[in-house]
Length: 380
Image 1: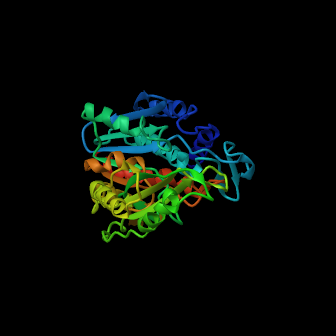
Image 2: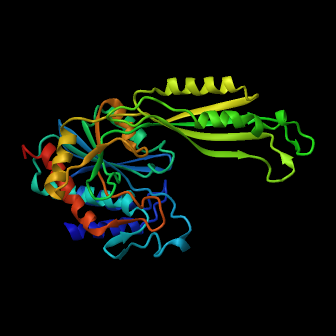
Image 3: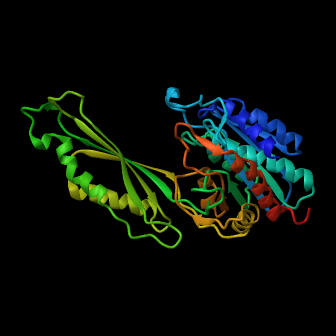
């Protein structure tokens, strides 16, 4: 099993599946899942490839959730080995997607193959959902498949996400929820002019400065035992023409808010808009987008099964956590579905020389099999 998962991960890394291009990853995986006895359906929405496979019937229904797309590799000259040429070096497998998340996808498939071979008459339903839109806008991937599942009355009871949740060692952290994510784009208009003649009030940067300071000073007293306090971070400030003697006609401020369930998107938008109004920056617009709702903390059979698997296979008691960025679990969790994320160490994801420790990759299928057995295997 260990050699098989490394070989499969290498095959997936070799395919340059920069979002939303699946680059043939799902063709390879569909063939293996069908051979294992799963019913495989290919769902293409827009330019996005999605794969849904299932085995068994009734409850409980456990879905394994992953993605085959990756972020762009960046300057290839900065990689020690080509990003889409899987390379083993010093006990690690290097390549774009090794940790996020082709290693987990390979481990999912190998675990499913082993589990179904040993327990073809397992109880309940086992399914797997793969998309090529997780690293992109996420408009034609998992969110569309969730709608498809709703129409068929086939939503799962539990979702195990293979995102790289571990911090320093495999299985030291599991995600049992996620903060919501809000995107704000504030544009303040002024008058473009010559720096020698423009009035300070005409320069939108001058008018925005107090407001920008107030935005970055916002604090939210809404943390609890499960979630950290809500935080606002400015991600970009843009103004000017590039010339040294021209004042800008507009300044654009982009910011992101990661919020816990104790603060709603509506209340946060109201607070930001009130702050803008009180700062009186002049003519301005605020575009507001909810990119993910908060969910969790999860508590139930899946949390118990993941905890037991980490203890049994890795001899490690995982720490439950709700930090990190967003994942496609956000399309299931807010529906009241138990969502847990367990995957490899995340210290190199989205970076040059992304990698996964080969021993971790080799142990992941065993961890996942233990989870499957804990939830679906007892009646097999």
